Image (cartoon, rainbow, N blue to C red; front, side, top):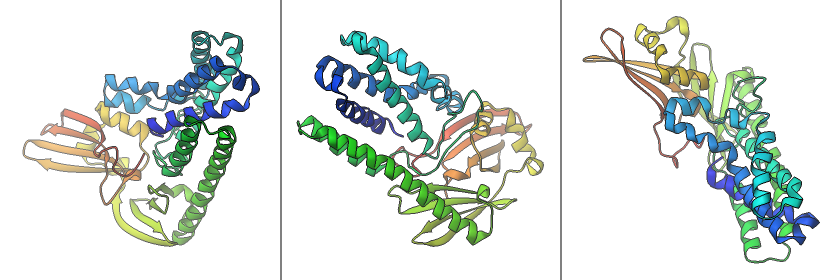
Length: 324
């Protein structure tokens, strides 16, 4: 999810830790846990430093190793121990480490619910896993946790009970979103008489509709599911290795294209002939919106099919859909 949401969840986790008698009785432990859950809630995204090596390196590594299976076990003591010492809570370092672990794990779980996905089962597999049931920013989760944090900030005496209620509702909400996703998926699957493996879905911002991509073999079909109805939007040719144009094949050596194929699943390619060469654009159809394909790897070639430039990334603003 987005950085702001992760940090907010770090605050509410710290608030819920007050249910532990030792935490409620010692202010230094409370401050230590607040610092630990804030950092722990953001720690997996420290891989954003890979942006310094360029967009290709970032695409390859973001939500990879730092979100992997052993990562929480490394982040928890790495952050928890020095924070406990810094705040004079060394005697309760085990508690600080435990709440840091909760924060890191919650971060990874929430990212798993997003369409971008995580490599959370490394080192056993490098496959990108994604449940596709939450946007990058979920307004309902943010509002609920934000309200609980504000009550705590203004000294509400029953804040701990509020935090416990909010986290219980968060778990129920996540389960409900999975149920809704599966019901919509079943409807679309039955409508087109296709196996679910051929269908990818993303929720809209308020969760009232779903956009989908269906793999039809030689092409992809995009559309919306809203109010129980399926609405088709467009069809795009599938980028099949055996039918690629020579210009498209020539771009496979470009770092941006290699990073794109490392991450993307539903791939469309467009080759445009220009005065002095070619422009080849690879797009991930999963992230279509209003007939646009904002996640791309674009490569320019000369007439001899030599790579001149390549770039990969999102051709949209952060606040524009799709929210992944």
